[in-house]
Amino acid sequence: MPWLDPYARVTRRLGESVARLCQIASVLHVARFFGLDWKTVMDLDCAYLQRTLGPVDLEAWRSSAWMNSRCTRGHRYATVIVSLCKRVLWVGRGRGREDVRPFFALLGPQRCRRLRAAIMDMNTSYELEVRRHCPNAVVVFDLFHVVAKYGREVIDRVRSGRASIRGDRRHRKLVKSPLAAEEPRLVAFRRGRAARGAAGG
Image (tube, rainbow, N blue to C red; front, top):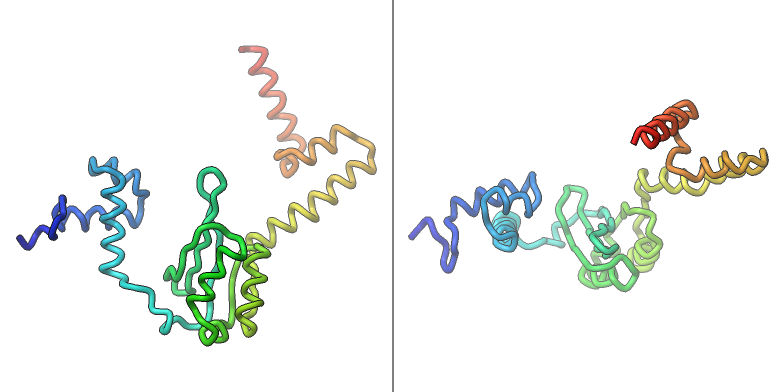
């Protein structure tokens, strides 16, 4: 039967429809849409990716990589390494030095020396391993994480310091709250609305 793969429980047409929808939606939502088990959807998506993308060709990989960490439930991390053409090169559990070291072992010394740039979040483990295995690579930090770190370590300290100089505990507490970046009038408006809601409730 040309419309059914060996040992498959869904038709090829349905499998391709599931895989195409997985490109824009989560596995759970696709499973609910088609009325399938989420594991079936995940297997169909993986099979489609293997057919269309094939194995990763590290020999054809050029000179740059983007290293990033992903967090799932329970603060379990995974490291995702992507080429600049948005092709996933490697995925591993965790984000420590020993967790990303297998990727460099997979590359080998010759390909490691070929690496010219590594874009990453501000994870010390990534930086140390790149500098150890790829001496010719330039470490580039993601602008989003640079700005976020600057906001946490510089701007918040300046605001907190100014509040301490004034000796105003109320303003110092406000600086540490998520409302610190908002205008004082907006803060007062929200507090007044919350108070009115509590009184009316």
